[in-house]
Image 1 (cartoon, rainbow, N blue to C red):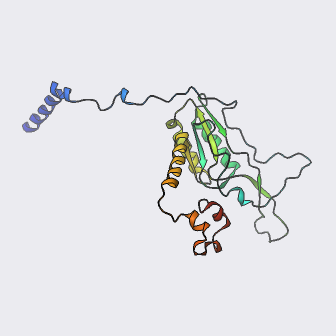
Image 2 (image 1 turned 90 degrees about the vertical axis):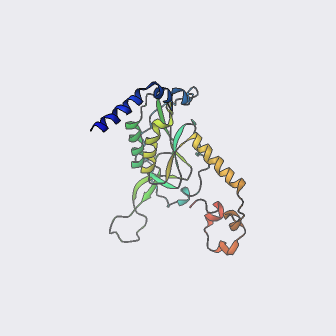
Image 3 (image 1 turned 135 degrees about the vertical axis):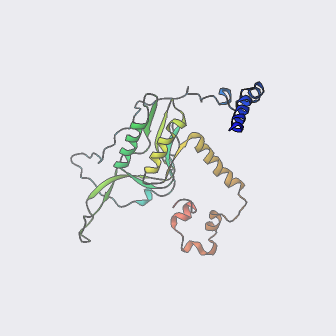
Length: 245
């Protein structure tokens, strides 16, 4: 018992000694953190909240709702136009093709309403409202008798397309968890990005193409019809070289 008391007194004397206080130097301070980014160039749109999209497109009274084919080409390949952030801040981009229904738009809108402070933040849609009709026959109905009735409407999305954009007087760590939660709930592969992340992705892809030392790339193999691959590959593989499925 006496030995334990002596050890405790020795530790207390060491911690309170001037030599120990001089040796203990703080590892991090306020000056070690980077300054916050400048928000001088932030421009708010006319509407800061996401617009409520209609579940069914509004047609004129004299026009009958039309039916279409599947048109899977609207989901294949890369997005050529809406693949950049307009406000150069944060957003969600699709990494594969898919379709968004009305329920997905409402999920995104309500998630931002509950988790984001709109006094200093704005959100904008980068995809149109559901417009493509999807038809389906009733359960137990025999085949034939023409195309089935319209069940719901969707919005086709291609890889690389920006789905929603977020900006304002905020930093990425304030909306990162919200963007990631929204991205993982979508029916297609998506990811939360910033302008810096998109720049790094583009630079990494460019660097990979320039510094690649392997001559047997998908583009070289398909263009030269090696092993007779044109007999069994898809038409889209000849166009995008096995990059988009």
